Length: 214
Image 1 (tube, rainbow, N blue to C red):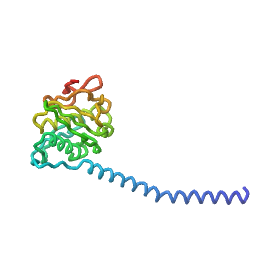
Image 2 (image 1 turned 180 degrees about the horizontal axis):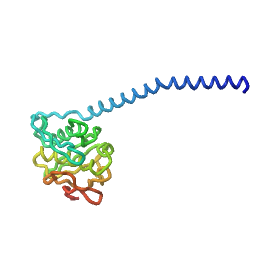
Image 3 (image 1 turned 120 degrees about the vertical axis):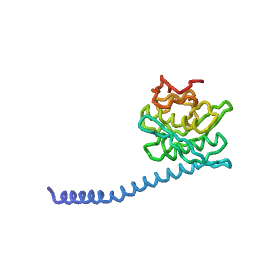
Image 4 (image 1 turned 60 degrees about the vertical axis):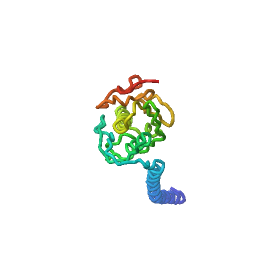
């Protein structure tokens, strides 16, 4: 091999080694940047969804329905400051459901979910409008969708007297399903939410406790 070519090969090899060495700090900086962004997202979520406090708040024993196994939800009694106003009370409950599970295994709604709005009609019809994360952040599968819906419905039913049925919106819009399975086109009857939420719910077969009214 010509002497000049040997020198070129050696120079290239040294350059490659130097490049690999210089990549290590870059990888560390990228990893730290990712961790920083994750912390920033959590902080931003906390700012966007601050704790709700009203003059009528009273600390009570609330029943929050979190996951109790892979296909069921069950009530957990927590001390929670709740408003006497049913709309504010519902918002407080749903925020607690999202933000305060005792363990990650009990979580039924993605941590990134926010409650954009909550409305209550005189006939007891409640409308809960969630961010896109309620669907995009859910694990795939019908059971996770059933548990998400049932945790919302049963938490509201158990703590807010007068609610009769529930409509779930995503980003202000009615959608066909939560994340491909549970039908959201109708209303969920809050007077007959099943004790064990394991009913099959597909696009062609809505949840048993859903009152499919238009």
